[in-house]
Length: 252
Length: 253
Image (tube, rainbow over all chains, first blue to last red; front, side):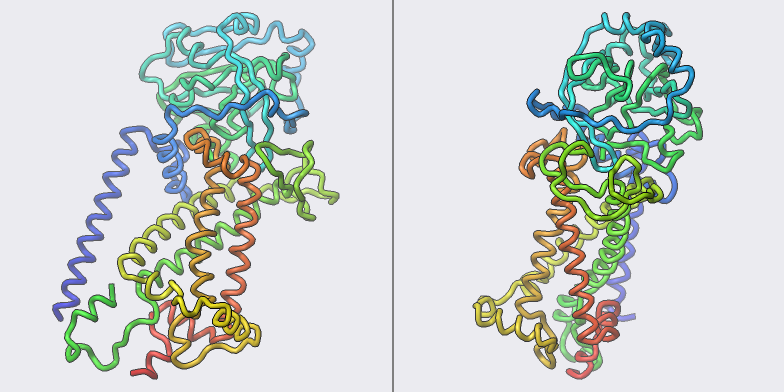
């Protein structure tokens, strides 16, 4: 064996060992700091984990851009939804006076709030961009209770790591991590552009997560569940989206 | 890597059959990884585009907004008025997963390439055009040569001409960074940390539109690149990019 190839062999070995142990350390760190998304397995797991981890590190406290009233899209575009079910229509006939938001799971005081109770909570207004994964977008003013306030009221346990939220529409559910759940701009929205939240845009209640794509802003929400693990929900991939082939984290 | 290694070895130790590779190992490996990533990004990008083949300028845009332009193709969403009586199947889920995974690999590969290329003097030696070649006369000669489809031969074929050098530099230092930047500017999370990255492009919809145009330019580059490879000897060129050796090397020895 020539001097040259031995040197090459040793270098390659060292680089490979450093790479492997570096990767192992990175995976350990990612697990420890919850930087692996629930759909982080499988073929696209590495890319998804890199996106989630990188954006989580960068964006933990960053605020979504807010716009001037003159920039509000007129008219905004309400995406199509599956035909509204009978359960929804019954509430609609009663002008949503009986609509309730149930909060359970890892909380000290499970509760169920009526719309009028939620409207008496502190209200935040913000003009933000809603971008759909398809490519279109609109800017609107949203009014609602910061989700963090509701989580405070029910006494969320410190072990809770995710909020699972469900629509009254079947099989429509999502979840977000605590960075987004406690984020000041994440709202349980009940108003839009100065009025009630129209049904087409998710009224009476929609979760608005402005730092993620539109599909994380589930319409017609009825229930929030605090949990430390997403394994028990659905197929364990975090939300309905990965079950339908879409990424759980939608920061991009 | 190879260059400095061979250079430091005494001439007598070099076997007679070895020559400097046409392309260094890092260039070869990163070239093919980038190729696969680019094709994956292209296919997935087209799939994502098909869900809304309309483009806008500014921050926001949707089917109720007048578009900057729209592509005359059917869409994979019923909400988009295309004039076609049918809707294509939705492929956005895997397309988005694949798009971002390929983008990550492409970015890491690109960083590896740039670091090694700087280290090896690849840009200075192989891609930076000589000042003399940048005259209008020199450039128009090269362009005329290309238009007559007359590939370079002998010593000339050994290195890149000024037009090739400028094109590669444009792709590496302008188009790739721009396509990454405009891609990131479409992310609401990234926009929350670097709002200026979106504002300087004119808004999130502008970023999407620029991302599309830069991709078109990259596809144009790919097409011309492959045509040139075919014209100058497909097997020879591809072998050089895989093994590092090409026929002219052998002749020189």
